[in-house]
Image 1: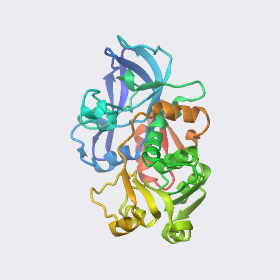
Image 2 (image 1 turned 60 degrees about the vertical axis):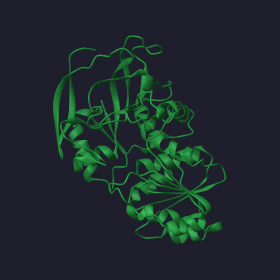
Image 3 (image 1 turned 135 degrees about the vertical axis):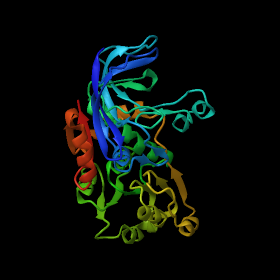
Image 4 (image 1 turned 90 degrees about the vertical axis):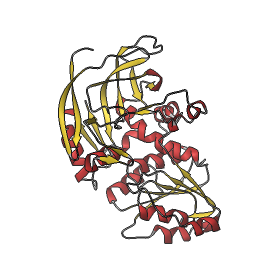
Length: 347
């Protein structure tokens, strides 16, 4: 495809604007993709609200959006296995493939990774078309739509968390925070055969959704204490705790919710760089702490799990906005966190 396309860009803190750009053409090894759905992620909202995310600072126009599903419109030189019209999911971070981390298979930790919607790495995909390295594009089977293709991105975070911590059938789990990543973690646990899943959050809408995707019981932390509840369980806690809220209070709680030799997995990204852990309790329990940075080697597995029906991924979507309303979608999602669980942009 040639010509011009519309792009939604962040030009400053809480300032979004429309611009026109040339439709990018695929270089050797790349695909050109017409976007159909892109998820709105918490990190997009964070960039919008604060003009920064973790150590990245906005210092020029940046297109947001890194959860894309679409259809191939052109195939770059040397690419095999793809043709125009293929539905694809895009894994947003392209690693160098050559460094020690990449060669060990830990490509999510590559220092030269180029991630969509990150300053000085790559623009995001709130745009009509994009080009992407074919090695990080995955064909979708007939039973998986491009909306789910985009949602595979957050799903992989939950899957990676449950793989790192080796969650096994017969174990019990607590998930703190049931926003998009919390829900993806619940669905991943369920798919791994874990049927005892307790979930805490402060927003009822999210807790209802948690029940819908497989929670055993939910707790609104404003009204009841999951710590008190955990003490009543056999062994005084659960095997696995997943912190998916990225906040100080829940991070401090994690070590008090495991049984002996239990595992704590830190999945949520905190806006504050330093948080406390109850290390004395962790030591007494001989607990293990895992930290999660994105995901690796999981897209094919995630696609199979969604295609088979093991993970009902489309259930997490609460709002769909048209691309022409992209600015409204981001503002609305920022100001209505109590009701927007997962928003997607439809092209």
